[in-house]
Length: 103
Image (tube, rainbow, N blue to C red):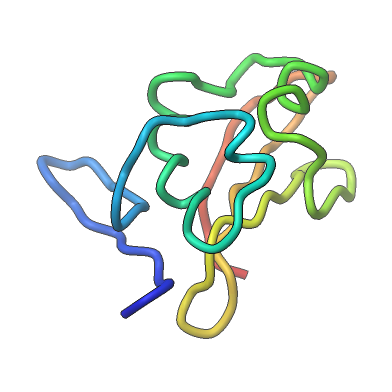
């Protein structure tokens, strides 16, 4: 299914991209379509967001598409009925966790 988030399990790991690739902050901020889905695994596993400050996250990801305090939302790619998002949860100005879900 074109444009859908492919979730696959391999040895207990979940992947969120059809074509996983390296995270690139400039590409993320200019992303369209599935580009962010293809980078999100590398972002979460290699780069990591936990413990980062808001300025650090903004430098990597740009401004969130939805910001109502906590969590912030970054759009990833379309899902069957809606869109997949990266939720970034905050406490005391630092990332406490991230989660991927559809809206």
